[in-house]
Amino acid sequence: MDEETPADDAVQPLTTDTVFGAPCWVSLLAHDLDAAQGFYGRVLGWTFRKGRLGEGFSVALSDGMPVAGIGAHASTARMAVVWTPYFAVGDADVTAARIRERSGTVAVGPLSLAGGRGALAADRDGAVFGIWAGRLFAGWDVWHKDAPAWVRLRTRNAFDAAIFYGEVLEWACDRPGCCDVGYEEDEVVLRSGGHVVARLSSGVVGVRPRWQVYFPVPDVEARVRAALDHGGQETARQDTPYGPEVTVRDPDGGLFTLTSDVPRR
Image (cartoon, rainbow, N blue to C red):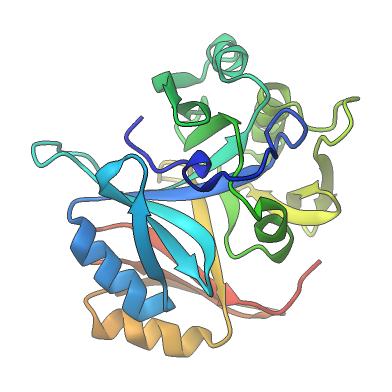
């Protein structure tokens, strides 16, 4: 799996055996790593350090905290640039089997990487996501609580999707530490440790369902202007009770959404 993984930062023994079902990382595969770092550094104020997977990978930091991974496609690869969420699982091979059994697709892996095993998959409607079993990076519990990134599935039917992911990722099960699932404001809402970590929304028509990655920022409009100034494009805008949510396409084609960092628990 040519993705940065949470194990890259692991220095503490927190693992997905006890924390599972929730998003644990987000990652971007770009065509040009330096250009991607330049764009996201200027737009979101991130700094970067090298990842353990080699020269083609880096970890994005916000105030010293790991936020996301950015890697580079092979120069000959013709693949879409996309932000992908990874979900913590207890056993990547068992989870991959569950995905296949429920008509999903496992595109890459599971593969053994530093500190665990991961895979890249798609649900039965085609939305791409990753799974990770193993160590989580140091400070993941703070990342989890403060939510420097959160995700929403835009799909055909949120209830049907919730059944798929619930069975695959063991949501709302009897094991201690599993995620809770509820229905709020016409969305399926996923909570882990009492914190909202993902939402599933129905109504996608005419486009392929996808996981949408959100980055909360203090000033959405300022960050949008920075994105436009550095080659990004605004593709969608929605007003919410918490302020605007603006979806931006980076110069490489990767979509992400800027949202207010006002607490919305």
